Image (cartoon, rainbow, N blue to C red; front, side):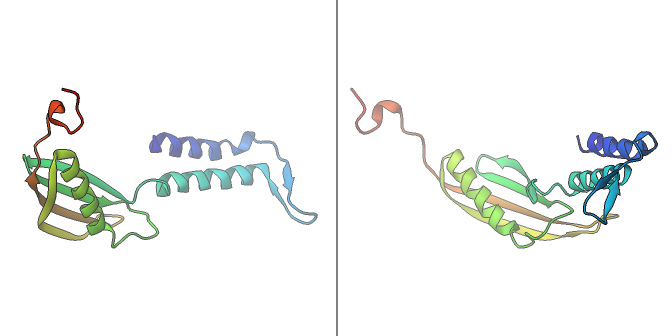
Length: 150
């Protein structure tokens, strides 16, 4: 999707010879040609596609190692305006959700590691954690629930 949008923006800027040679009057003394306005719009759209400001800062991949053990791999996107310290908070949030959805009361972090991967042309932050879900709570059969009709 990003590639298609980028190629579309570049194609629009290549079409400048067929754009009418007219201008948009911004003020009495300033104007901008249609071709320049299209070029600016295409550059802004390409920047938006690359930066993607509405996407989450971190990508999280959960891998089940055993019934009660999970590995979380986090990767931060390349262009952000912050969020460097939120990896461990994100780990706890995912661990709490996993414990709840898998039927456990709590969790314990067994291993935690984070760093920076120096990829070319842009480096990105990463983090990995392994956790153990603890105190399994077996589901209560429907007939045994308080207030259930007998």
